[in-house]
Image (spheres, rainbow, N blue to C red):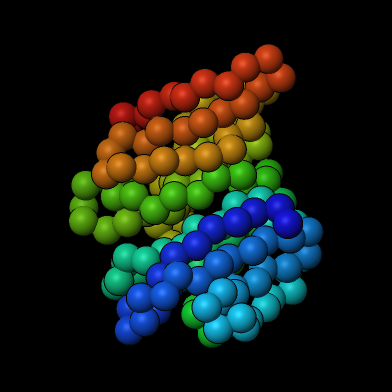
Length: 161
């Protein structure tokens, strides 16, 4: 297991679905029913997953990032979004970065950048440090709070947009 997330992905059913990333796949699992919701083979290892529980956000319900890619899929496991990136997507978040009322995808990567996408279009790129790997993103409306790890320390950085 390389990444883990959970969320109520189906607006008609409030049960949380467990999302499990591995070195070659993404699995959605219903713990209460002890059954797979879907299983996808992927081109590489999954390093980050988010469960999009925001209805009508314009984004797929599951977003997963890995080495060279971010992909999105439906609750049925159908891939509906693919973004090719230059490094490994280590943190993902959905936030209204520009205040237009629509959520953008924020991708933290192992090269020390935060990249903001509107669907598959890169709209902003911010360098947050050398030699750091972004490992988590906590988004509470605004600002974006990112945890980054270096060889010697861990710290939190705020990016006010």
